[in-house]
Image 1: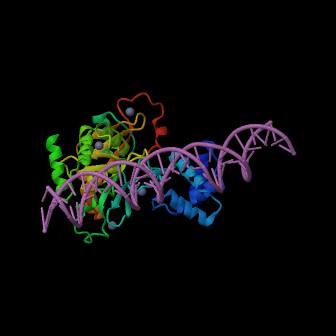
Image 2: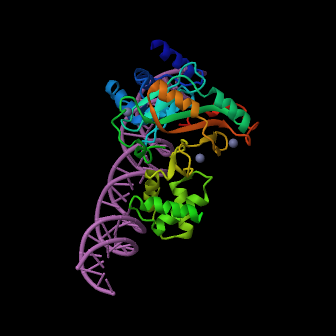
Image 3: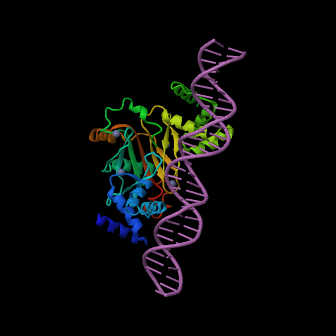
Length: 159
Length: 159
DNA sequence: TTACAAATTGATAATTTTTATCATTTAATT
DNA sequence: AATTAAATGATAAAAATTATCAATTTGTAA
Ligand SMILES: [Zn+2]
Ligand SMILES: [Zn+2]
Ligand SMILES: [Zn+2]
Ligand SMILES: [Zn+2]
C-alpha cells in the first residue's frame, strides 16, 4: 500500500505533478477498493468520509489525471457512468470483465487471453494495438438457475 | 432494404409494437448507414432531413425499443455518447471493433474470433455468455507513421 | 362509420453526469 | 518576504438522456 502510494507519487512527479493531500486521499480510496470498479461519485463519497473538505471537481480532475498517466483505467459497462480501476502495475494490457446481466456484478479474468487474436489483428488489419477492452455479458455462477430466459436480458442494459 | 424493413416490422409486431412512420424513418436511417456507428443525435439529424416533424425524444425511444428487442446494438467508445448499429441478422454474437486513437475511425472485424475464449470462460468461470464486446484501441493503417509516441495516446480518451 | 381505449408522439421540463470558470489557497522559487 | 505557478472548492454551465403530459394517431368493437 505505502509502496504503491510512493510509486504513484513518483509517477506524478516525473510529469511535474504533485501528490497533494487530495490526490493522495483519492489514490488511497482507489487502492483500498482495488477489486471494485468505482464511479467518480463512488470515489467522491468514499474520500469525503475521510477528508470531508474535498470537492467533487477535484476528484474528477484527479481521476482524469491518473487516467491520462495510465495509472488507472476508465471503464464503461453501460450504466451511464464511467468507472475506474487501477492498471496492473506491470501488465501492458488490460484484464477482461465478466458482467452479470442479472445481478450487475463484475468479475475479472486477470490474465490477458487475447495474445493470439491481437497478433491476427495486427497482421490482417495492419492495426497497431495499444490497448483493448473485452467484456462478456451473461449470467454469473451466483445467478445460475435464477434466470428463466437469459436471452431476454440482453438489450438496453448493455453498451 | 425493403426486405429488412419488413422483417423488422414483423419483429416489432410480434411484440405488439407498431412500425409507425417515425419508427420506420429511424430504422431506414440506421439501415442506410449500417457501416457507421451513429449516436442518437446523428440519427435524429438524419431522420429530420426527411421527416422534419420528428421529435428527439421519439428517436431516443425508438433506439431504446430496437435495442430492447436486440434489433440494434448499443456501443460506447468513450466519447460521451452511446452509439448504435444493427445486429447482423443471423449472428448470435457481435463483431469486434478497431478504434483508432488518432483519427477516431471505427473499423470492424466482422467475424467472431472469440469462440475458443468463450468456451474457456464458460468452463473456467461457470459464466453463461450471452453477448460480448471487444474493442481494440490503437493506430489504424491510415494513420500509421503519423504518430510519434502512440503510448501517449492511451488514457483519458478511452473507456 | 362512430365511439372508445390504448399506444405513440412532440414539446419541453427535469435529471444526471461531466466539464468549465474563477476567486482563493497552497506550494515552490527567488 | 515577495513572486509565480499549481491546485483547489464552489458553483455555473454544458451535454446527454429520461420523464412528463397534453394532443394525436391507431386499432378495435359496437
Ligand atoms: Zn450474477
Ligand atoms: Zn476490472
Ligand atoms: Zn486512424
Ligand atoms: Zn460495429
